[in-house]
Amino acid sequence: MPLPFHKTDLHGPLCCLAPRPIHAAPEPFDSLQEHYNNLCMEKSQKINPFILHILQEVDEEIKNGLERITLNIAGNSRLTPVERVTGEDFWILYRILKKNPYITGLDVRYNLLSDVGAYYAARLLQKQPYLIYLNLMFNDIGPEGGELIAKALHKNKILKHLKMTGNKIENKGGMCFAAMLQINSSLEKLDLGDCDLGMQSVIAFATVLTQNQTIKGINLNRPLLYGEQEESTVHLGHMLKENHCLVELHMCKHQIKTDGIRQLCDALYLNRSLRYLDVSCNKITHDGMVYLADVLKSNTTLEVIDLSFNRIENAGANYLSETLASHNRSLKALSVVSNNIEGEGLVALSQSMKTNPTFSNIYIWGNKFDEATCVAYSDLIQTGRLKPDNTDVEPFVVDGRVYLAEVSNGLKKHYYWTPTYGGACSDSSNAGFTLVPVGQNL
Image (cartoon, rainbow, N blue to C red; front, top):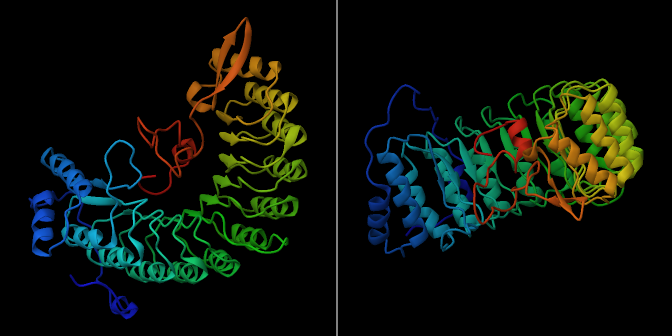
């Protein structure tokens, strides 16, 4: 079996990919299961029973008339025995998928592809003229593999959504993806969270996105930043002033404090496209909420804000509730999970829902509930003002007293993991992506 690779293999001209016309039905295709079996025998490759099982299911879907299929070979499935996919396994998958007209999405998260698999993923992006969604989360892909995939996207005109989350492509790989965004004109959503990006590549993305008119959603969670200057917010804030296409921005774990949130809020006075802002897991206090509450009085585009795992406390919750009650009528969802808020602030947020008809989703678990809090949210749910699917708490009564229990709802509850039963992409668990839909197969 030929294995990669010299990086120069992908530097030559890439094929120009053209989508199949929507009205044209795909031609009959060989069974994926048979094709996989035959190739494994021909190349003396060990058959992976997990892949075989999934391909068998997809063959049935094709027989039943489905055309746009996402091949789900996620290595973290809890419902099916899993033998994780290796780079060598992915070589066989590349061979059987490269011209298949039925497969428009491929999910191989939490496997063992490494840079070998990244090489064939890049080849797939060259050869497969129908693939619009590719999920490579947590596959041990390094800087070399990241560079190969980024360069394969220079001339790809099909892919809409790429998830590279958790692959340590580092600053080198990040710079390659930033350079790609100067050229690629089709990608709409890019997830580079937990990729060990450095400040240099964060600045590069901020610079490129002032000009890129295609990207609607980007995830830059948890870059490796050193120092206390909050430099990333300065550059991304400047980008938000110039960019008029970005709809969704994730800045989790950017060490944002009061000055950083002020920089972002200054930009949001001018920005009229951003609808989903994620600043969870930072160091934002109630002082920062003064700026956010003020900008929400005039900003009419923000619909989802994730403030989870900060420390806005009662004062911050009060600032937000005042604005939501009397001024803002565009925000639909707010998460203040684990923000050290006590009963006063939580009750104030519940009161704002009574006067604000647009404010529909609120997530409050991990704060300090008192009896007044439990009664307030129980009343909202029982009167129908707050739908049970739109919050992460559920009331119950013991000895005549109301308490709140946690339920598995949130803005992006299933970002890193899938449940042991039920759908992983339910609207209530991933409400942020339902309220602000960007990209394919979220």
